[in-house]
Picture (cartoon, rainbow, N blue to C red):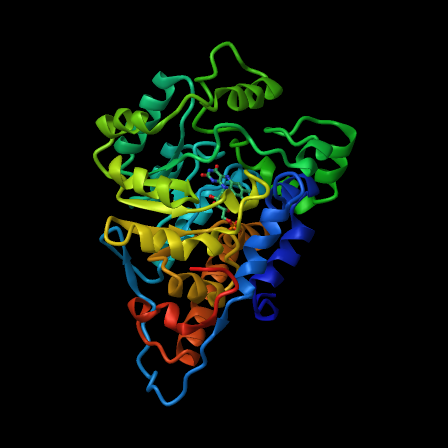
Length: 384
Ligand code: FNR
């Protein structure tokens, strides 16, 4: 099976067949008209490489560092909610595949497996992503739990004061754990392999939140509690509150503007993620790649720049690294692997990305990640 899978698109096709539609659509969708979702990948593809020859590319290395830690690839698995519904115990499996491949894994606030579930099965530091929610006791406790579990890095996502609407999720009646309607039952029962595996795990709801949603104990109540908890009052001053409780590395995610990038570093971030949430939040925002170079230029030297949204290949990785990212996050690229083949699929997605990255570096005449610059790109469709 894995011999016929040669790119992330192949993993996507297999995931589409193997994951019940309501959960597959949750991955493969953007907010409202999905224009930003489409442009993320479309704009990356518009960047053309400068093909170089005669450069002696015998010794290529894709290894690098992220926030001082050595990595085999300048890549981090992005926080993605509900990965444990794409594949049973999905967060544990993805974290293990990432560790084996030598790259960090980020657990989402709204994961199915809890911080403790992942820590028990991983035995090495991972990253934890935090959404600011109104219940500050809950947030302070989550930060303490991430610390106790040995998490090295806190990723604070700021681009979700309110949830972007995804039409497909509404039409599919997405809920966690799934409510049993005729259509959700048909969607799940037509995937007996997924159902059988899901029956073997007790983890089917928000692992970090169970026990906190006071007075709430039914399925719809949980989802409602989560969506009501996103804190619209959060502002830059509140970063101090987080900093007082977290001594590890702090990454601020969802930055698409140079002024915000400056604010993030001034507030004490060690890195920012230039991200539009994979086109799931502000529909109509530009693609991440189109704003990257300007932001990298404006905040050069203040901290690390991670970029995500739209990366589906090693070629895309080279494009973003050349345009100013120090490292990248991928969401769907590993989720397709997870849905298609579980842990083996995440491993395969990372292997494919690494091979493509290495080959593209060779054909651009570059042997080290740090040597990728805008000079490796021949034309920019937008002003720098
Ligand atoms: C996400 N993303 C996300 N981000 C975050 O900070 N917390 C979260 O819980 C989630 N959940 C989530 C679920 C799913 C299914 C997707 C696809 C994405 C956004 C994610 O971290 C990242 O920014 C994007 O996935 C990057 O875009 P690509 O790589 O998917 O194109």
